[in-house]
Amino acid sequence: MLQIQGLTKQFGTVRAVDGVTLSVPPGQMVGVIGRSGAGKSTMLRLINRLEDPTEGRVLFGDLDVSALKGRGLRGWRARCAMIFQQFNLVGRLDVLGNVLLGRSYAVATPRALLKLWAEQDKAIALSALEQFDMGLLAAQRADTLSGGQQQRVAIARALVQQPDVILADEPIASLDPRNTRTVMDALRRINQELGITVLCNLHDLDIAKAYCDRLVGMAAGKVVFDGRPESLTESEAHELYGLEAGEVIDLPMPVQVPAHVASARLADRRAASAH
Ligand SMILES: Nc1ncnc2c1ncn2[C@@H]1O[C@H](COP(=O)(O)OP(=O)(O)OP(=O)(O)O)[C@@H](O)[C@H]1O
Ligand SMILES: [Mg+2]
Image 1 (tube, rainbow, N blue to C red):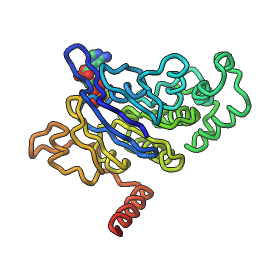
Image 2: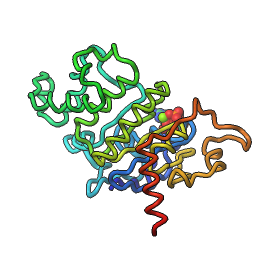
Image 3: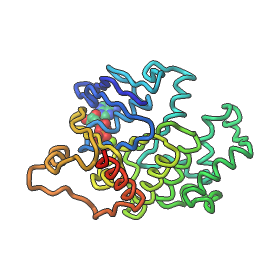
């Protein structure tokens, strides 16, 4: 269980994250939504310890993440992989080399620095790529790939860290609708098949509703909505995005709920109504 307790981050006079308390059970896929500047990225960065909190703390099981230093902190960052909007690949390295960077958390540092990868690490990296139909591109330089392909490499790199949690900060913001679905499908699959907890910042409300088990809505650093996607009312959504009544949320295009998500939802609803 990931527990966020009274988490606060102050930058000068701005409270980017303001007293956030959340419990995220293992294996949940959480969509963090809200308008620009709401504090979504800062919250993920506090969980990963790219930022230190002004107040409050993050716990993962018995581990007090906020108190970690040195090797302990490095260990936490391995268990809590990050995915970014801009993919953050090493362009001049080939695809396999990029995925292997995720293994550097798991192997001794000198070996990782010298890129003396064991065959076993290479096999793990290749199998991660194959899961996302990227095996044939293993030897290609990362900077020759499309955005959607690059993001799938970034997801494979996160996966070979064997993380408990994946934090994805606007992973689809630079992608077209088709690649958006491929990347969200990849995240949903590793969430469902491997039970990895996913926290995903998303601008697009329809995508968040289609893929996530739970939505956390943030405004001015605070959690103002926390619940199942279907329980978010239109007026709450409008409030969250700071729109006046009558304004329309600008969505690039309607999104089909993927079949596997739709059938899981249906099964959930049936189970809920059976009680
Ligand atoms: N390093 C920083 N120094 C100063 N202010 C910061 C810093 N990082 C974030 N902020 C401020 O904190 C607030 C929250 O920013 P954050 O990036 O977390 O929002 P966000 O919800 O991710 O927005 P977006 O949807 O645009 O990515 C904003 O007012 C931002 O300007
Ligand atoms: Mg952000």
